[in-house]
Length: 265
Image (cartoon, rainbow, N blue to C red; front, side, top):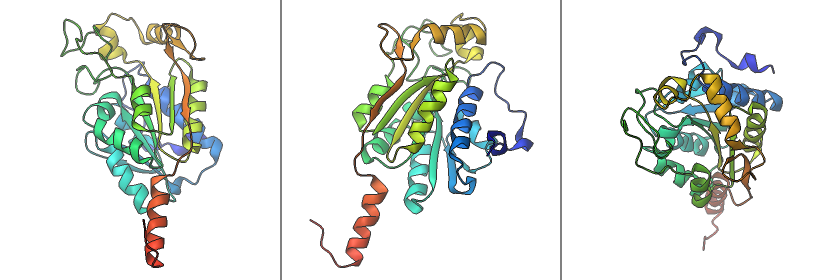
C-alpha cells in the first residue's frame, strides 16, 4: 500500500506550524507501515493531547484521540481486549513523560505489546511553549523565561530502566534512519519506545534563538550521532532489543489454564 493511502485526505491540509518536525515523523511512520503491507483495519493508533496528538486525526486507521497523558492507558485496554490488533501510540514529550509518565513506566514494566513513538520537540507546543520534562537544562520557555532550572529526563535511559524490551532513538534530521528504527519497533513483540527528536521553530526555536526550521534541522544533525558513538552528541539508534514474556500472551495463557482447571503456582 502507498503510504499516502493511509492518510485521511479530507483532514488536509494539516494544522501543524510551518517547519514543524512532526510531519517528518508521521511520514517516517507511514513509510514503515506501508512496507509491511498491514491491513489498516487491524491497526489502532492512539494519541493523547498536544501537537503530536493531532497525528491520529490524519491517519486512515482505527484511531483514538484520548485525554492528556492517558494514551498508553487507553492503548493497554485496546490491546488486552483484542491482542490481534497492532496498537501504536503517538505521543509527545509532555504528554508521555509528564502527566503520562506513570503509564509509560508501567507499560514498559508489564511489557505489553505496544509501539510508543514519542515526538520530542523539547516543549509543550500546543499550549504556548511551557517547558516539558525533556526541555534541556537552561533552555528558555514561556514558563522558564530565565532558562529551565530542571534537568531533563533521558527518555532512552528511563525506558530502559523501566523494562521496555525495545528502545530506540531517531531524529527528523535523519528521516530514513528514523523510519528504520520505527519499523524495528513495530516488528518487536513487546513494549517498544522510539524517541523521535524533532524541531519546534515556533515556540522552542524562537525563544532560544535557534533560527529557522532549517537551522534547527542543521542543529539536530550536528548534535546527534547516528552511530551513537560520538562523545558529547545525542546518540541515535537501537539501544535495547531483547525478548521476554509479553503481557497479553501471559494473561490469556493464564485464563486458558484456569478454564482447563489447572492450578497456578
